[in-house]
Image 1 (tube, rainbow, N blue to C red):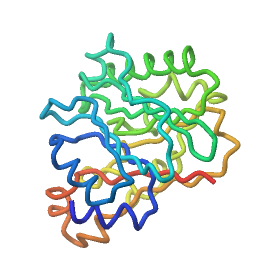
Image 2: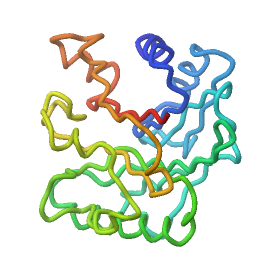
Image 3: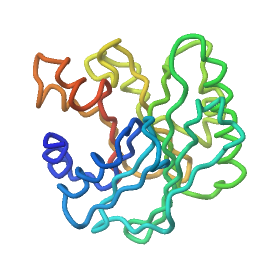
Image 4: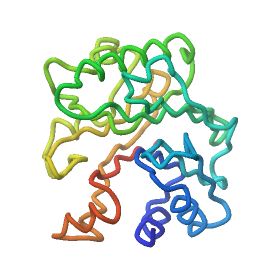
Length: 231
């Protein structure tokens, strides 16, 4: 908690999507350490299982409605981690953020593909004209064949993975250093194509735990965060 309390203000981050929160009290402690202007939401407050969550800076972000889950009919495909939707506005512009955590591991590629199909269908049917950002632990590679993200990649006029350059670049900037691989992604819809943006893997493990990946894994995560900043 102390490390994250230092990191978040330094990065000037306004929304954080988290995939593996197992303890509500720890998340509340983090929120309290950040200040009165922060709030948090967790998709299942009563679960000790690693659930999807948000931390939100209310000084910068207006919450249009409480976060909600979608696609419950595809619980198996999403490994019972239903996509968690956040509807917010910033500078009088609305954004829909969808936090995901796909099924992990080799042998589950078909479940991840089916999750992509379901998610793309939902966006195209219900969020066709919205500024949509999908982000999280997708547990698969962007540069791969066959590819579980084909439903989005084939619709290249409508969707873009903003971290493609990271995925095709040096392993030093990949989001899962223990493998190593790059499996955490940010996807935007074409309503945001005209924006200027910067996507980076945040190498906070090298800042706070240089040369000791094990401590980073223990105290923060086995993943590095991937962030996007829009201008």
